[in-house]
Length: 386
Image (cartoon, rainbow, N blue to C red; front, side, top):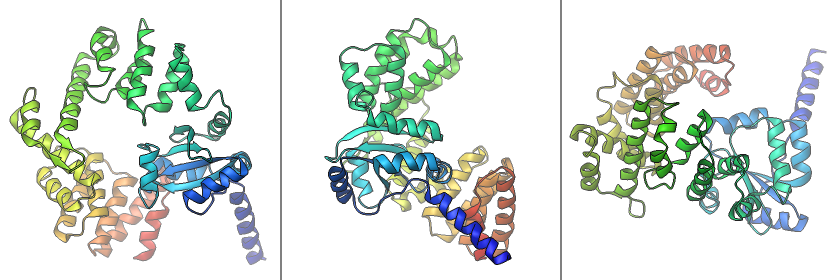
């Protein structure tokens, strides 16, 4: 009877999961052909394996029956890792820069609509309805903007849809939006700050001319700190040659020392180089620069140290460097013990072969994770393997 009950539970669990979105197999070319033949749009969950919100969508939203009913009936559904295989070229083609991004593409390969981020069931279904409504698709909204639409809510919504994939267009949208506002609220400031990438952004003029409005709601020190970051972002952008992956150190240091000390500028350049090396998967350079940057890590925050230690766990194989990463993770835990950094510590101990400490910290991490309602599946796999 007990065995039968277990099998029944597994059967019903399988049925429940099967009611969610059914993702197609095959390459993108075959998906396009199928979409054209069936006169449907392709829904693409553009994700990355490290993306937390992506995992939550898989766990909480994609398996839901109402979501599956809507998406399975109307779309060819695909999950594509934007950092592997053909996903790399698709990310470039469709300008995917944030995860998860949801793309709606027709059989000719043309983007019809997009949105992004973790969303609940109701909004996720509404996105699909918008993609099917010719008056609400991104091209239609852009056309409406070009014809002069200046409704503040319309402009705010359009900026939200384009902010992470079309910075120049978003700058134009928000420029029109802010010109229509006599006073700013907190949401306006958040949008303005999110929309400005550097001092070359069309919104930087708004940032400067509306300083009085901004500093009514934000301390002057924070305004000035953000302004400094914008200037640094501009210097970063102009110092790095994306094509040949080289830095103009002299330009960076000369420009940065106009508002930073020499020591601060040199450290900032080293941080920029380390970050870029990680993005370029030049792990040897990343390892070397990070070890230099964090010789003294006493002032670094818990999250910063945990992120650094995790990057070493994922990308570094030198045992002495991994042992240093263990110290960073220990300091992170010392400053703020939580599921994420105890999991990092367990993984690092396991990688350097210290099974005893790996077991201790995996158990502690699982307990912390379950108490906080976290998904501890990956940590439990470590524990089982010890």
